[in-house]
Image 1 (cartoon, rainbow, N blue to C red):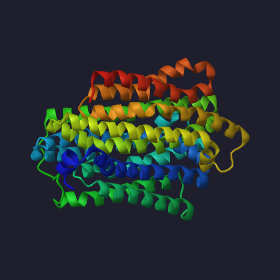
Image 2 (image 1 turned 90 degrees about the horizontal axis):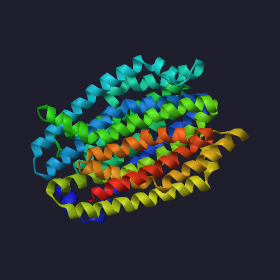
Image 3 (image 1 turned 90 degrees about the vertical axis):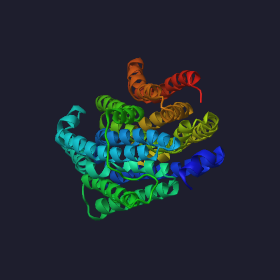
Image 4 (image 1 turned 180 degrees about the vertical axis):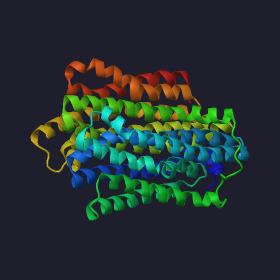
Length: 439
């Protein structure tokens, strides 16, 4: 189905099932791989490498942050340009964005490779834990120029109406990386660097495969002679900044949390925090997959001036986000022990007691998280970048840091309560912003 028929003429509920459900499955496939990544490292290599992975992970995500900024930031103006029937302008955004992503991968990857030791020492890592974390981070840094673009190609496929192709690409990438990681860790007996190499190899293979039809000129978006301008770059940065700020601010918060956890509870507390982050890494991609998959449709209809259709699409988005979020909270509350034992095969009593309290408090996050998530996605799609950035920064950094001080007297319990408190405050902020800017 071409993008005009899909975004402008398909009934909103049918559009949701056509676009959003494959997007959710696509992100679920990625989330399952991340889950499997943690399980394989924890079960095959042990608790110390699992802690090292979690210490390095914020910097790994920062490594992908600029690509995500450019990918998401270019997707909105591309969709709006197509809605206005300005195909050449859309092609220029697409071409320039791809070149910017490769350049960003070179620059940020080089910086993280050179600064790996001092950055991880600041986290409190030393000895074997430091060496393992550096190995893991440096593999991602070296491969950044050829892997980070995977975070953009997904958007470009959906814009072109290739939603099922995007889904199958993500499923294939997850299966490929899981097989490679099992092979590298269990059969070849490589260290934690093998886990990073498996992921990077899968990303590179799938990125190359995804761009073949673009290079052959078989897609709606086509490469052209790039024409960079200050306006175009500002537009991309403005539209992509909420996701970028969320990634960066979220990683800064993770670094802060890991720093505090190392001093309050040692490696065990870091491992429990890692389990919570893997649980979030399973739920959040589902929400992201549904909301992000609808962004091209919302942006296209914004360009076409169809406000009523935007409202109908967003109703589907909010409803589905609430269902997924509340169901996830229930799973975390009722299957806590099962989730914890996925990552640690033989936890002692103290570890399980800490993990059970942490997971129970963490589950409360998803009673309200869906609302701010869907609102931020809507604000991005309709070019309300400032409002989206405010929700993003507040959720990822401002509210968590504020609540660290509020809950400080509670020690580790205060850290576990931080997530639900942040989500509640973010929901209140989102409701206030949505009241001012209704669909």
